[in-house]
Every structure is written in C-alpha cells, then in structure tokens.
Length: 163
Image (cartoon, rainbow, N blue to C red; front, side, top):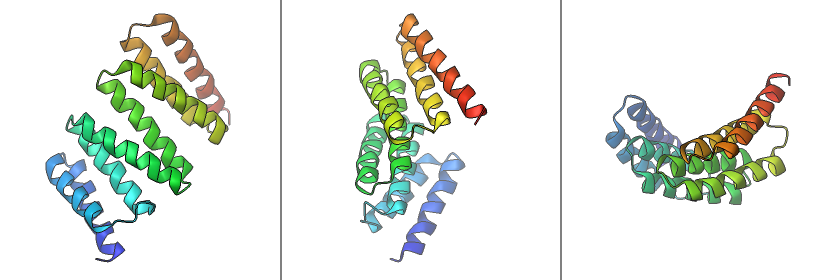
C-alpha cells in the first residue's frame, strides 16, 4: 500500500477519533501501523501518537504508555526532537492520569531537564512541562513542590509571552 493510502487511513482514524468513535479509530490506527513498518517515518510516528491519545481517551493507560514509549524511542532514533519531547510529555500525563505519581515525577523531571538541554528557548514547552509537574504534586499533596513548580510555570509563561 502506498504512503498516500496509509495517510488517508490515518486521517480516517483521526476523523473517527474526533467524532468520539474511539474504538473505530483504534482499529484504523492499528491498520495503518500494520501497513507502514518504517518506524522512523514521520507518518508512522504521528500514527503512534494518535493511537496513544486514542488509548488515553478510552482509559487504556497501558496501551497509551506503550505508544508514547515507542514513539519517544522512534523519534529519538530519527532525531525528531520536537516529536520526542511531545511523546515524553504525553507519557508524563499518562502516568499522572493513571495515579502513578512517583513514576510521573521522575519522568517529569527528566522532561524538564531534556527540554532545557534540547530546546532551551522553547519557553512555552517549559511552561507546560512545569505546569504538568505542578499538577502531579498537587494531586500527590506535596504543597511546597507544587508551589515551586507553579512558580516556574508562571516564569516560563511570562518569558513565552514576552518573546
């Protein structure tokens, strides 16, 4: 099957997902992945991302986690840093949403460090990463860490707005 046909299948999956037809979308995402075996291909990475988001909407945190972990590795191999950072962020979100606060904290701190290293001028991305860390600490009832992260999120939000 040609790439344009796979892309059309992925768009169908996305349409189903946006319409709230998550199970139908999942089938289409999986079919597209089955047909496209080039893991470093941007299309493959976007399909994995879509499937991960779809799994998250269905409450399938293990499936979402698997997608985001695979997507992060594939993006790193392909040197697609923006996509790798997004996959990493979504992995943090999934860990928080599934109540795995310790793992979410570790991944969140890794994300912040990696963002500072790879995209130090992406103030918006840093603000979002710090906000996610704040959410983790708020739910985990670690007030002092929550306050520290929310302050960092504000700082980077201001920097992004003044850019």
